[in-house]
Image 1 (spheres, rainbow, N blue to C red):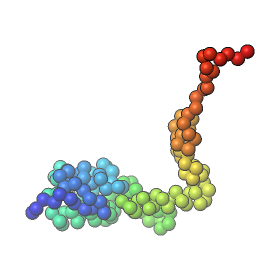
Image 2 (tube, rainbow, N blue to C red):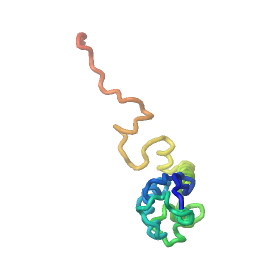
Image 3 (cartoon, rainbow, N blue to C red):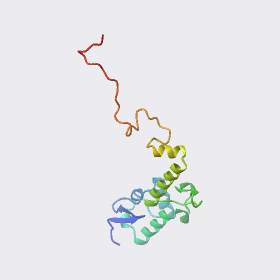
Image 4 (cartoon, rainbow, N blue to C red):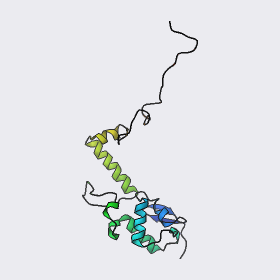
Length: 154
């Protein structure tokens, strides 16, 4: 068995020197809890370097990340329950997650929901205040103009 410096899972290159738990977190859509659950269900040690895993283990890990329901993952750990288009439960990772998120935002904008309006106008969506933050589109804060010291108004 040889050491692999780069392991590819879900179209993501993972550093072979890292522990399996921490390396899996580099895949977009895989959180700490999700990675922990996948490793527990596939019975792969968390603290083993991912570069030392056999090809069969890496393949089993990749399949588990793509289709976690097949290995018995609890439904509440899945990131896309009741998908609006298909109505199925699935877990999206990497580019699929980005694509689905962009489509969700476009759908909100198309139906002219409040959240869609806020996304379209580059405003905060979740109720944050806008007086001091989110000033990218408003310009720099002006402040109060002071009169020069030598000139007095009469």
